[in-house]
Image 1: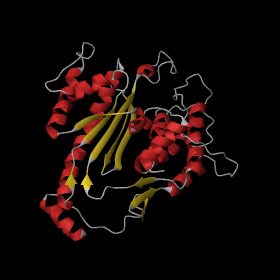
Image 2: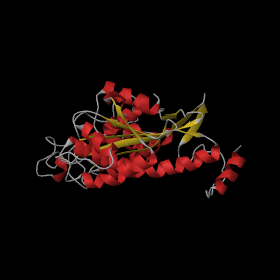
Image 3: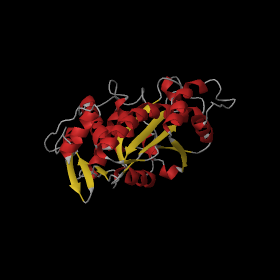
Image 4: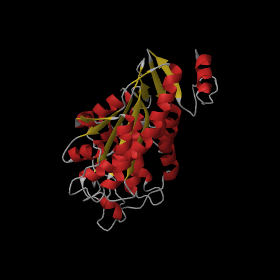
Length: 322
């Protein structure tokens, strides 16, 4: 029972309190249906659609929230029209993407980069997200937790130099790579992120992947510790943590660097391999399994670039259940 779990939690040093119904918590509606939990934020979506002026029935919905080509700074482009508050809409979208709509994480992060100097192209990108939301207003995050197995899975991915050839060459961001990952506990997404690797410039696909892997590990390890504690409280069986790494091009090198102790490196990676030692030690110590995964199963891909309709909908189905 809940009260028994609360007593067990206190024995492990966790101070938990029994609250009322979670429905409506932070504006997120929770519904239980056939062993699933459906998280939606239709009220917030309606506010976003209204703020963008897309309430009319003649607005044609989009099938994806972002175009295939990346969103650039567009310094010489048409100035913003200012028909709506750009920063306000981005703020609402960030809240939505961070709670129940991970399918928006990439597109919203791209728009958020230009919050203080938007152009017409950036406004158009927000309107496209609004059109996508208009067609998926009642959709959200469908959680289908495993009944008795407590496993943790992470899907880190990177887009190497995704802005190169699109952004102006005098912009430092034109050579930055993008990190994207999602972490699942008991088959339920609990944390996801999409952002540029602004602190460094990766010089190879392998380095971009290693940077994404390291970033994912910083978020993953505390979650593993929390899951282990909660698993003991609720008497759930713990499985070996899995970290799924997409293998393509020289990502086989990333797999080698991440899983081998004592540390090994290739001639191209010697100068930066030192920063990976800490998470390699943790991976071995914690018994984390690094496994190959094909690109079509790499959930992190939806957080790193604009995808075609078929690829996007396939990954969205695996990630969100619809």
